[in-house]
Length: 111
Length: 112
Image 1: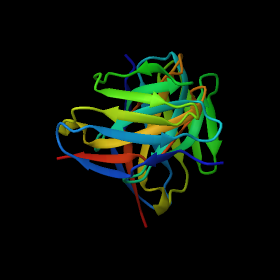
Image 2: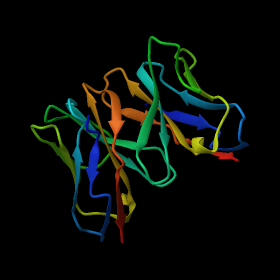
Image 3: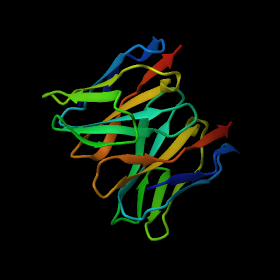
Image 4: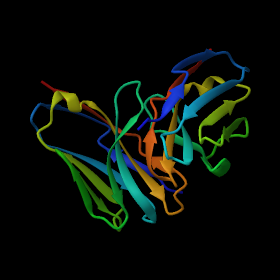
């Protein structure tokens, strides 16, 4: 059974740039959720995709967008990067939203 | 709006002690509650999942209880070991199953 994998592991960008983070879900899972974790805090829900459609969104602006592909892998896109976007971005996959399994995350640093 | 808090924020104990970590949530209409472990710079490892109809779950030295009516869960760690040092996060998922609401975590250090 392949777990959740995220790429890249680390990324450095500058303010105003755009970034794409990728997530491969665990085999058999049809739901992907994305979270942002600032240093010293718990993860904050960004959005969830279920069978290629957005299925819920947290309190994040529209410059945070996503995609889910037919193989249930997913992308998180962030436009017009701000310093506060520096965080660990976590992807979690599940079957129908139950018992989410997390990847190791992408550490994004904005200079 | 669901809010999750965890007490204590940090804990440092000698090896061998039994520990209790506390989690509180404001809205009792939850689908399930899950405890996670996070090592520095890493993702989350699921420890125990308690569905809303259950009172507790056990795995090895870990036991988690859930009291929905009072909005509380506890994670009990027996005979702590240095390898247990990590941040422990609790999270609740609402009845629509859309997303987790996480607490801020308890940072545990077990000293040899």
